[in-house]
Length: 428
Image (cartoon, rainbow, N blue to C red; front, side, top):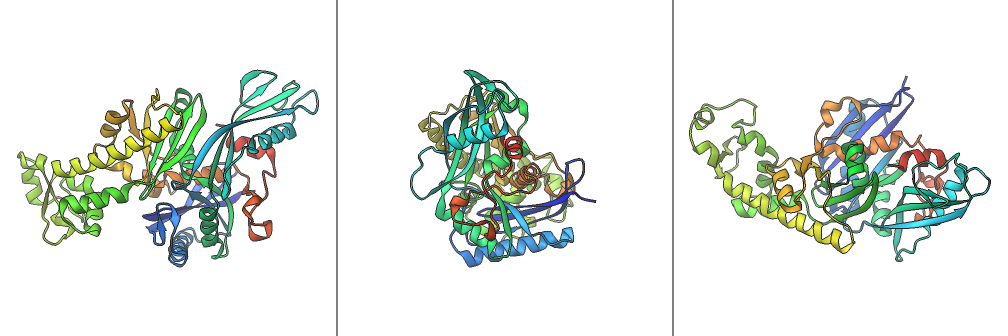
């Protein structure tokens, strides 16, 4: 019998993904339900039409629940958008006894939380990067150590209050409790990055429809969180203009491009014409889109397609570099760049990333779950899988700050009700 059930909801600009998993006695989440549907009412990670957003979320969750055969009472929810910002801050407390206890850890983290943030913003995460015990740094778990002074170096992620409230409102109007709201880059990193990459230094880019989320790690700890307001939908717009097709047709070409390049038609069989093209030079220069049923378009130039993709991603990556430099964060990561999210599967994207960032690059596929994982092996589900992993380590107790204005009666949990669980969940 399952120990408990966790559900995750990733509300994006182009699609909404939901996953339901049961956590067994061994602690490994087993996926039992999954669904992904086009989103509406969401633009660049922000709710712009509550009714449309609610309908999209409800439809996706209903499909997920039908597959799982259960109804879920709560969800772990992702958030992204250019309103996400981060800073690093330290908190210091005197140790209450000779030996450091969980309460000392809690107090040090709360001390770091007192950083000044602009009005109209809420703290999403206070993530310990390291602890310092009597000037001894590099401590990951100080509980049980002897000392008189405990200091924490924490990474603090914040978001705009109105954006969070509107997102929460959409979910809560469906009668669901929100266990926690998690920055999408932080969630994806737990499903995609390896401990070695985090230790060496790595940058995660979660390329969504309207937003690209950024999370950098140095010496095993997160050092920067943020977003740029561009993603796969911008690529779709560029393709529509460059290829002279509609936005819907451009999206179909983008989504099916790998199969098209391999000469496969929509039904999965290979046409005789495509077999012949493989024998000539034309195959290298032309992408056959006739199988997609696009009016007036039978072929597109592969070179033109790739040039459009490269131009847009070069711009996005340059914006990321500028944003990191402005924040005092370097981009020379020894472990390179890990690209994930639905648009990370586009042709030549790792090649473009290597060219712009001048470091190694790979596409990150989510891992760590069992069950119906074939349904969510795609990088498009990295955030959702990360939310499940996050929830599996939370012991079912929400940690959304009550300062958001939601009481426990509204389905929002209190602040870090169990330091041990909090500590286990956030230390990289």
